[in-house]
Length: 156
Image (cartoon, rainbow, N blue to C red; front, side):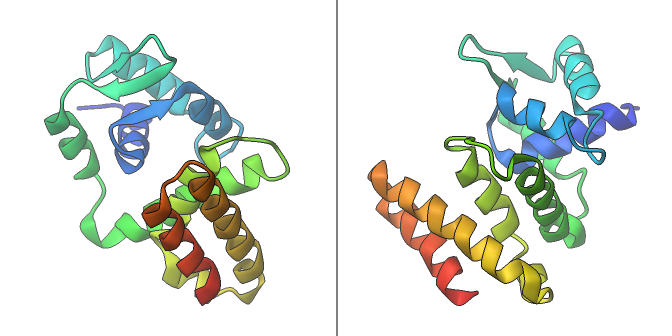
């Protein structure tokens, strides 16, 4: 079977969608929870699950590989997995200029919105994160996306 490092990397990338930027992998490596993703990435590339593109992004070689990777996460655990991934990225990236990675962070956290509501101390920082993500989406004319972030921000 696949090593734990490769499984973790595949699950993380599946949560992000079809592609993952190298910078995001770098942020995750700075955390204790996801420090093994770089090793998992190298192995997943050499095993042919992931390919590196010229732009510095990594993609699944096929949609079916992404689908299988996402299915490694039990359906009942998916919201928590996305939320934890977002929270770790948020803590590692806090105070840094991470560009549009802020959209990725907010999206991951928002998958587990009910977990935010259980911790009052998180509501304000996550609302601010969603406000920033909403503003960034507006600035790039993604109004529907912006609305979703701003709606979460106002609900907290």
